Amino acid sequence: MKNKGSRWYQKKQVARKYDEKRFNRGGLVLDFKEKEMVLSLVKPKGKKVLDIATGTGRFAEMLTKRGGDVVGLDASREMLSKGEADYLVGDALRLPFEDDSFDVTISMRFIHLLRPHQVDDFIKEVMRVTNHKFVFESLHPMSLRMLYQWALPQKSRMFSNSLMVDRFNDIKGIKDVRYHEKFLIPYGIYQCLPLDLAEKIIEFDESVVKKKPWTASTIYWELFFD
Ligand SMILES: C[S@@+](CC[C@H](N)C(=O)[O-])C[C@H]1O[C@@H](n2cnc3c(N)ncnc32)[C@H](O)[C@@H]1O
Image (cartoon, rainbow, N blue to C red; front, side, top):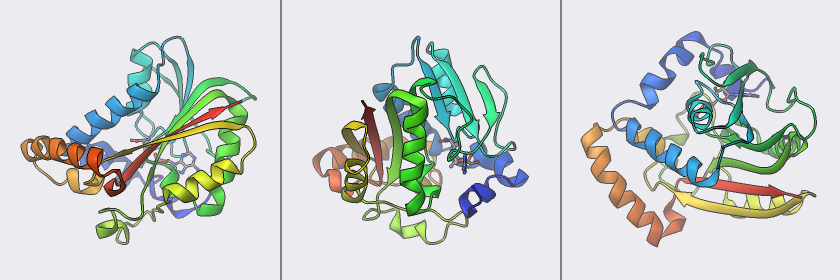
C-alpha cells in the first residue's frame, strides 16, 4: 500500500525516533494505559495472535510475555526491532498468511493511516486470516485531536463511531461490534507533558470520559467474527 502514512514510517529518522518521541515523559503514561486497555480486551495465553502495523513491537512483546504465540507485521523494515515475538515485513492490505491462521488480531495506532475506502478492504483481509476477534483503535473527529490533526505530516484520518458501526454492519461475517471510549486528551498532547503532570491529568481525563464518553479522542473496537 503506497500512501503517505505508510511511506512516512519507512524513513530511517522517523523510525529511529518513534519510541523516544512518543513513549517518553508524559507519553509513558499513555503507553501504560494503552497496554492496560489492550490486555483488558485480549487474553493472549495459548492463542495465536497477529499484531498488524506492530511498529517497534510494544504490544507484540507484551502479548508474547503473557503467553501468546505472536507475529508482528509492519510495512516498514525500519520500524521493526528484534524481540521475542516473530516479526516480518508485509502489507496490512495483503497479509501474507493462510486463511484462519490466527485466533486474535490486533492493530493499534494504524487505521487512521488508511484512506476511508481502504478500511473495508482492511477489515475483510483481517477477517480472512482471523478466527475469532479483531481489536483495534480509531481516532474520533469530534475530539481535542482536532487541535493538531491538520498539522501532522503523515496524514491521519478520523472516523466517527456511527460511520464505523455502519461500515461494520454492512460486512458479512461480523457477528458483534463493541467499542470503548478512552482519552479526553489525545496522544500528541500527553507526549509533550512532563511525566508527573501526565500522571495527575490521566485520572481527571479518565473520570471525564467515564461520565461523558462523547469527549473521547480514541476509540477501542472489538469485532467478533462468525
Ligand atoms: C503509528 S505507528 C503504530 C505502531 C504500533 N502499532 C504502536 O502502537 O506503537 C503506525 C505503523 O503502521 C505501519 N504501517 C503503515 N502502513 C502500513 C501497511 N500498509 N501495512 C503494514 N503496516 C503499515 C507503519 O510502518 C508504522 O509502524
